[in-house]
Length: 473
Ligand code: NAD
Image (cartoon, rainbow, N blue to C red; front, side):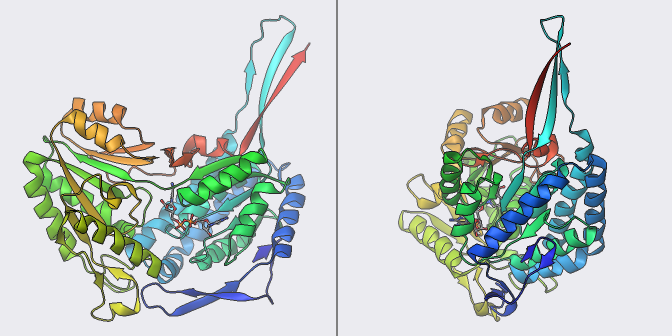
């Protein structure tokens, strides 16, 4: 725990496991209700001075944090692989993506522009000024344990807010390492605080009900997000909700099916499928299904599962036993209802993998809307393939979900891509692009995938109030 510029110890602790080996790799403090109160009080006190700092001062500290993060890139990536499981190369990419937010918002801090608005009255002037919203409670998930932190903290700090971070209980060590960076960068006591906890519910309640907290920013499941949003709404708090997804990927008949299979296998199995923007329903035109499925299955079956620290590992473990059970039950349900397993479809236990939570990269064909996997977020290495006949049909099928985060389209026809882009009800659409994310681009969802955007110019707006001054002169 890091509260008011101090590392607090001497409290009960909980262990952190490596999901590839099961071994305990560290222990962190399990904070109490008094600790939550201390963190809120510290952030509230610190806000009174922090909000008066200039954008240039805040920017300097964010630059320093970015420099420190870049210097420690490999150490942070190794820690991430041990704590979360993704292959080292993917961890290095995530640390870079995480650092990008510090740099982007170090720059955006200086662009919190207001406005002068002309009035209909000759002797009146309108002035619009942006001001930091106040103390922010931030809750982050385990699947991207560093970038989800900087995606929230960088804009909040740039805006002049103070923050209390509560990371996921599976990945508190990455959060602790990030907090060390913020401390070394020189953020004043109380401006950034960390509370680690095994049972997150009391923290969620405090963030949503304590009058000193003005904003909740949450990334996690839709179920928890809805619950917290309800509580926050009752207390009139601003919220950002980055929730679950069920991304469709459409391969149009004019696309190269082999090229599309290559791209979609890369994004599907990224982070072992544990990504909110992972393609969860892959729609392929019936005329091209055969070469597509063949290529996708070959690529899936060739992936080497293992410890992310080992050279050649292409796919890491799932985060825990529960995740294995959920993926396996979705696959079994699909098979019982008529889907066919092209490759995978089972847990991996050979060659020492039984110590961790490994599931074989899986391709399912003949998936239908009656199956759980068609609607539930998968969060595992399973690629469900569905065939379709017409553009209208496939757009309707793609939009037939409660979620609206990401979608993917493969087509070589400009008009088709534009029609699909406009017709898909998703916040992010990758057009022949499997990585439509950047600190400079707005990330976020529609429908049950959430509220608000992270990154880009919009990212800082989420932490600002708009104040209007009407002046009679
Ligand atoms: P989760 O909702 O179980 O947990 C997310 C965070 O919320 C964790 O820090 C957890 O400790 C905390 N939490 C859980 N219950 C809480 C409660 N009652 N009060 C307060 N905090 C609580 O989700 P998860 O399994 O850790 O993460 C995976 C989910 O996150 C997936 O649904 C995924 O799609 C989503 N996600 C979304 C984005 C996005 O940007 N939209 C990014 C990454 C992950």
